[in-house]
Structures are given as structure tokens and as C-alpha cells.
Image 1 (cartoon, one colour):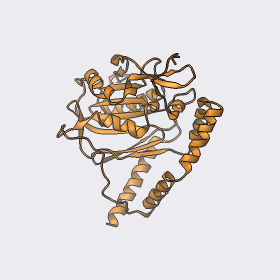
Image 2 (cartoon, one colour):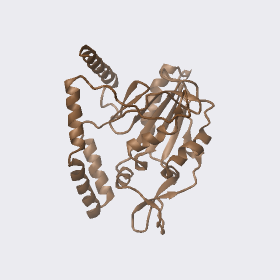
Image 3 (cartoon, helix red, strand yellow):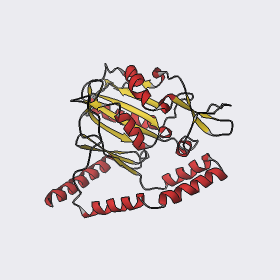
Image 4 (cartoon, one colour):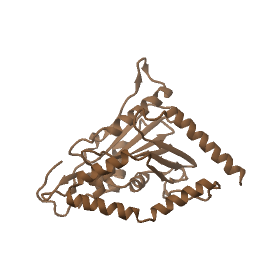
Length: 307
């Protein structure tokens, strides 16, 4: 990381940004956009320069260290070509089929999720998969370092790059829940989550971490957070996405979802996607998927029976 003598006027990196960009932790948010039509002619460079970069100055900044050891965001010139990747999938027999590309795409996502970011350039990447899968004609993957912002703000930033497919002049808005869950255990889970969010646990957790950082350093806090995450059964995040269909550069988005730590639940245009990030080989992914679908069917059946 670059060491600079004069860091006056530069935006400081948040404590969370310190922890998530350390020797023991590399946390990214991955956004997967699946398109209805091929994306061979997607004007990537102009979309990045004119739409993506202006959203947040951190997208055009690198993390540097001041003379007192504090980390800051320093504005730099962005070379778009260094951030955009065009992987090509193929099977041993040659060109792979859409169903074969499904497995290749999953492997590729797992691979890039664990790769460190290149030194000396802003902490984001775009991966454009022009090979069709069983779900889409093309897939675009955003990889954003969690130091750039929290999950909700990064999701909002990426959604602001999109337009309504039927009327681009109208703003994109997250969906509103108009229905209550009829199941008792769903209500109970909602109550528990709401109670925990409004409790003093956030304050009581944050203060010791702040003291630990002052008495030791940010790396020690990162190690503590890393151990806590490794000892957690699961981490769940959920975001209600737009209800209307969206597009990027006149390319309709068929589906979109996000993944970061643990389980990420995201809705788009009336569909719900559940993305799970777990240690490779830790769970049987096919069995987990079947069990999840069975659980949703049971909830739907019970919900419809009580209407």
C-alpha cells in the first residue's frame, strides 16, 4: 500500500474498511446480472466512465497510508481496461454448452471471489461472460471490495446504473412489501431480528472493537472479526430489490442477485434469488438447493391455505 507524506484533505477510510482490507480478511460484494440477450455489443467502457465511476468517488480512488499510519482514499486516474475481464468458457471437447457453462460459471465466481485485488488501482472489477448459460444469454459480474461501502450502499450504487426497461426516464425504486407473512414462525423470526437490530448489541460490540483498535491496531481487530465469522453458523443479509424490469444500455436484465458473506437474499421483478457463499465442499450444494425449494413450497402451501 502506498505511503504518502501529505494526506491532508483526503477522505479517511472507515474502521470497517480497515478491517475488511487486511492480511486476514478480504471481503467483497459480488453482483451477478443475467441478461435476456447476448451482451457482445455492450458499450462497457463508456458505461463505466459515464455511469459507474461518477456514482462514488471511491470508485476512482485507491487506499493509501498517511505519515501517522491512518488510511485515506486518494483520487487517481482510472484505466478502465485494467478492471474489465472477458473470460471464455470451454469444455475438453471444445465449445461448451449452456448447461456446461452453468458449472463453469459457478467455479469462476468461486475463483474470483478469493482473488486479491491488484495493487495501485481502485478496488473493483467487472467480469463479462459472453457465453450463454441455461439462465441467461450473457452474465456481467461486478466485484466490489467491501471497504468501498456497506452492502446496502453498494447494491444501491449498482442499481443506479440501471434503467427501467419500459421507460428509462422513470427512476428505479426498490420494491415495497404489501403482504404480511401468515406463518407463525416467520412472524417470530421477524420479531427476533427486529429486536436484535434495535438492541444495544451494536453499541456494545462496536465500542470494544474501537478500544481494541486504539490499544493494539486495526489488524488485531480484523483477526478478531475473522475468528468470529469462522465460528458463526451463518450470516444472512436480505435486500428488497426493484419490482420492475431493468436494463443496462438497452440490454434487458433477466435476473440479478448479490453475494457477500454467507447467505444473501435479493428480490427482483417478482422473483426471489438466494445466493449462498460457503467453504468449498462444506455443504452438498444440490441437497441444500432441494431442501431450500422444499421449504419454500411448504411455506407457500401453508400461506395459501390460510388466506
